[in-house]
Amino acid sequence: MNRSLAERLYDDFIYQKRYMYLVRGLGNTVLITVFALLIGVVLGAIIALIRVNYIQAKKKSPLLVIANFLSGLYLTVIRGTPMVVQLMIMYFVIWASGAPILIAIVSFGLNSGAYVAEVIRSGIQSVDRGQSEAGRSLGLSSRQTMAFIILPQAFKNVAPAIFNEFIVLLKETSVAGYVGIQDLTKGGDIIRSITYDAFPPLIVVALVYLVIVIGLTQVLHAIEGRLAKSDLR
Image (cartoon, rainbow, N blue to C red; front, side, top):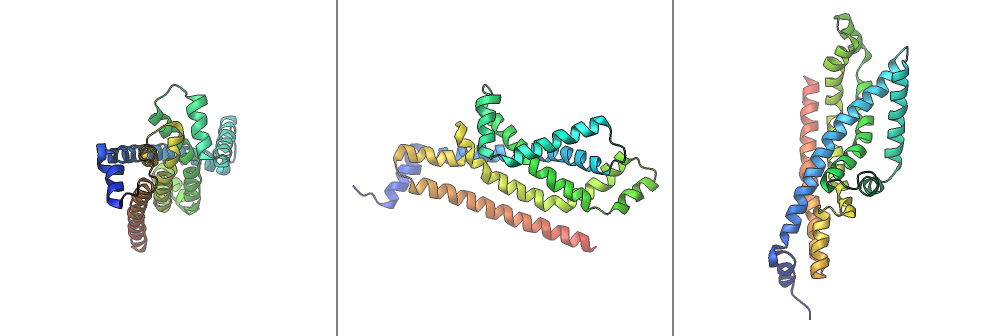
C-alpha cells in the first residue's frame, strides 16, 4: 500500500519521537568534531614546531632527530591510511574497552593533527625571516621569538585553513557509525532500519549537513574578510 509523503514523514520522524535519533546524533557529531579539532590543533602545532626546528637547527640534537623521525612517521601513516580504518583499529584493536565517543574524539583528533601540522608548518615558514631576526635583536630567546612573534602571525595566516579543516572534519565524522556511535548519519540510518523507508531520513541527514556546512562556510568567508582588512591597515 502506497503511503503519502505526509504519512511517511510522520512515521519517520514524529511517531515515537524518532526525530530524536537525529537530534542525539547531531549532538554527538558536534561534540566529536569540536574536541577532535582541539586535539588536532594542539598536536598539529607540536608536530609543526618539531619539523620547523629540525629544518632550521644548525646543530641537530639526538632528541630532535628522534622527534622529527617520529613526527614524519606519524604524518606518513595517518595521511596514508583511510580515516575509517584508523577509527576501526583504534576501536577494535588498540582501545577495545574504552568509551566509544572518547575513542572517536581521539581517533579523529589524531587524524586531524596530521593535516593541521602541515598547515601550521607552512604558516610558520610563510612568516618573513626578518621577524625572527628582529625578535632576537630585541633580546628574546629563540623560544620567546617563536611564541610571541612567529606563532601569532602564523596562526593568523592559517586561521582560514584551520577553520576549513573544521568543516572537513565535521563531514568526516559520518563514518563514526562504523563502530556503533550514533552520530547524525547513524541516526538517519537507524530510522531507515526501523521504518524500511530510506528516502526521507537520509535526505534530511544530507540537508542538515548541507545547512551546517553552508553556515560554517559563510563564517569562514567572514573570517577571511576580517583578516584581509586587518592586513591592509
